[in-house]
Amino acid sequence: MRHLEVRLTPWERRRLRQLRDRSPSPRVGKRATCLLLSSAGDPAIVIARATGLSLDAITDVRRRWRKRRLRSLSDRPRAGRPPRVTPRYRRELRRALRRGPLALGYVFTVWSIARLGAYLAQRTGGLAVSRDWLRRLVHAEGFVVGRPKHTLKGKRGEREYRRARRQLDRLKKGRRKRTRPTNSGTPTPPSSNCCRTSCAAGCARATSGR
Image (cartoon, rainbow, N blue to C red; front, top):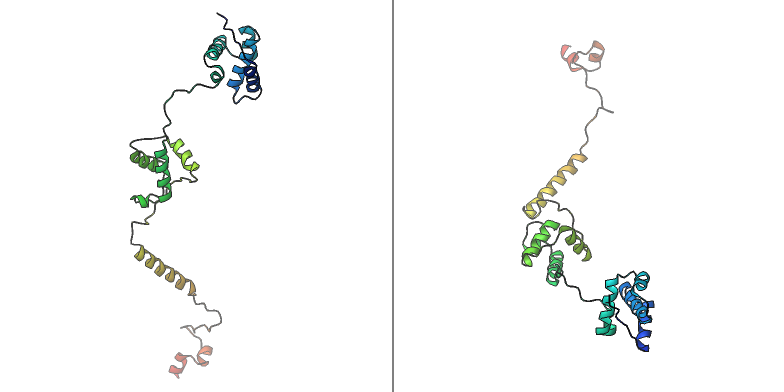
């Protein structure tokens, strides 16, 4: 492996020491240490033990330094697929959560994760995210999505329904006010098989027999 010599100006050395001691990330700190040790003439195997970098990584740090100097310490932009949740998706999500499904033309009153995901996919040209991720986005907007409660509200005549409820409440109140009559404190009617003593006391049967 060909040794790439690293030469530093006094200002570059001071800057590398600052980055080594107060690095914005562990990767930047390791690169700064690698360059300082390289400028001191330490071999790659010693630098690898001190920093944990591989020999190939040390060679890459030295090569990039010779081309870009201090700019070589920052991370390269990483290629990858763009985030799936676009600003448009978030705007549609906020709009759907704030207005509710009824205002958007649906017959149900509460969003479920499945219904909300289907609506957002329709509004954003087929963009779909997982239910777990959508639930996190909903929580990030300050909302909670629960299981919808199915009722007849919105599908019935609300005026007739309220009038029937009032009538039912009046019937219940009237039923509670009625009391069942008891025999407590009232005279017991005479028996049909009355005796002569009770007839003498004024029984109708005794009067008719006189």
